[in-house]
Length: 222
Length: 222
Picture 1 (cartoon, helix red, strand yellow):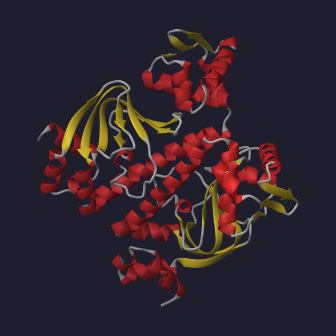
Picture 2 (cartoon, rainbow over the protein chains, first blue to last red):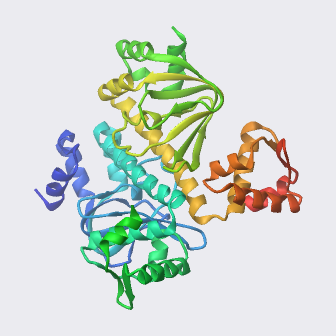
Picture 3 (cartoon, chains in turn purple, green):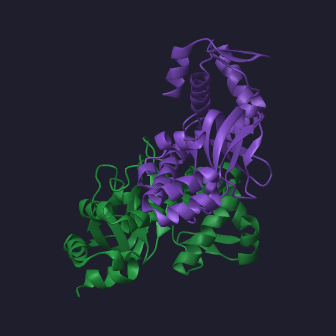
């Protein structure tokens, strides 16, 4: 059993419903891809395939024509990036961009191969669709934040999420980077961080944003 | 053949893959439901079933805890409301609200019955998921508008959409209602409409908002 087969066996709930031919076919059309920090994994120009994060972290985001961004969600080890294989799911007609947030290694299955198998095996198709629908829920959560929440609340949520993911109370990002995540302007983030700092909640330095008062920050996020 | 069977035969691509037992089962668990204008079709308290619009129009929207709204999309005759059957799609974990925008008649299939059939027939499950994923694309389009577009552009798009749906150059809505659709405050809409009126694009009266200059409005929306 090669590395792919071993990984897919634990990863895909439909693996046992595939016959040997399909399993081999998917493994033969797989590769292990390494991405540097900030390297593009997927843009709207192609449909390389689906990625399973082995190590590292991917970020999915929307990009406007004039270069504005908003982060939709992040993918951690053991999670799958289905939206990068939009050609597998014809009902997806929007573009997302995917980049590696930190150096990352991913298993990649060629879109055409997965497409072929999912046309034969309903369980594979159902899996792909269910994964996409699950991400729909993540995006709705961001939508709720954008439409209904004040920016201080969203910033607090973001700082808490980032501290949680990195297990580090210091968020090593520029104000510009945070603004891009939140789909807003740098000035807005800077103003808000200044207020947080004034209230003793964070300390802002060139190293990043250090959370000083977790309880207060959670109160704002609530 | 009863009314339901006749409707479902043309409507559901998977109908021919069902056996007679499943077809009868779905029809027996169907009803024709009438909704008054502004009546709730679905809220977050239950999972009645899926609705196919026979006549009229449904509106799906998000609602915040403090009563703010944003319209996600509308369903016209011949379209299906899958998100109201979120219990059929376990991967959907967010709440949407559905109301009848105008008096509407819908075929309703009980969620439990559809669930049962879709567990037996992969094609039915795939159809349900694909419908949901298709709506994901609509929601992403709203997200793009909210995050990346200025309010004048969004208002122009909304007026054009409403005029198109109703085939009427006068949008019969209050500023408050438009604001709810767009997830913003009434004052913002009023200010913007005043500017549009000043530019000779619309005429605002108690009857509603009449589009005077389609070309200019399209230019703003572009």
